[in-house]
Length: 211
Image: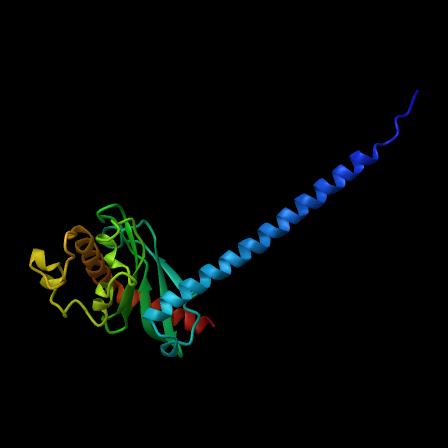
């Protein structure tokens, strides 16, 4: 029987393939970690813009609970970030989905303080028309900042509409559907908070006791 010598080129090729696969795997792991870290930092910046870091002493990014009320919060499950200081409730930041935007769902962050007033609102993502509906973004106009300090009693519940519908909030020239949807989504979040405030903050109190 004739034995064929092992090809040096074949061995080298196999080694390069193994090394290449390992390098790709390591690169993917490092990239994934970096992306996750960047996403966490961006989320933290958004949350602390609504609930200032000086007002809380917990890790609000990780201190979360999940609630379910599709009628008011738009999704099957809604993540809520819980802010507290020395174990006492400070605020709950909801991540509702407004389903009835002009071009599709609009994702929000809505911070509600323990007294039921809004700490602020930010638009996380949307597909609204550039130059019209995209004015809900904080870098397009100051419209979204006008919700800070508002509540279900300021204005009254009847006032939680755009002015075109008899409410107290501005709409945009040439674009009413987008602000109408956002105002309605924020109002619904406040309604959810009013109905579930006690149970939400019980989760905060329980978390504090478990630490």
